[in-house]
Length: 255
Picture 1 (tube, helix red, strand yellow):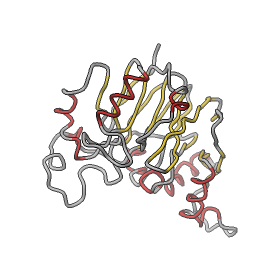
Picture 2: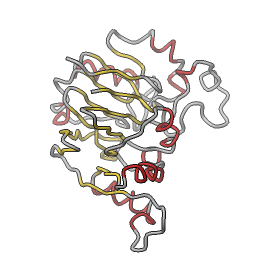
Picture 3: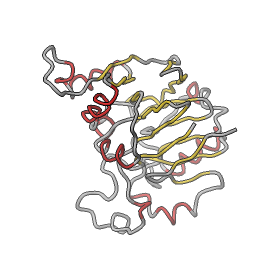
Picture 4: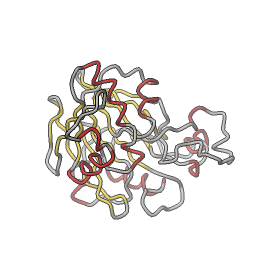
């Protein structure tokens, strides 16, 4: 299984529009962050977690030529705004793209992309096939995916586990019963917006505490704002086994 970070930034990305702070002005490419998205390649299948407004740029940058499914963590705009561009994969595969999401998220997708689901289909519109998910494990092209319920302030969202890998973004609380689904993972990705406490995202210290509790072999921080600081400096402050992710970073999940 290969994991690729297509985007590691917050809803505004980094640099932030009209911001001239040192991080937004940084010349280090690792400080340039598109909206959060993750690519998982396993057994020849390609799964995408979230398709935000940078979806097209991310697909081109990573040279993605096949997409078997998009799995949505939640319905916020920075996680679904790029889905119109699945058209390219429709043309290539001559099939709809499978979208996996819980019912509430599907309602938002149907609203935002009403033309996709309208009775009259305008020529050339995207084709999406919605698939329900809940608290039970589900299968995507033969790959078992375990949902992990977490909370983004008061909004319930899903993290996911595939084998020894788990991914959680946009969260600031993980219930104890959800942690049970995370124990035993070897590779763990979790969000941390900044060093200071935030109302709906883990802070860096909170994320580190969760990582230590789950105790994976390796952990990665994503969904990072410009308020976190420079990638080079924050990386030097992290405990062993924890990395600050950056756009384009990839790794293999081995034993």
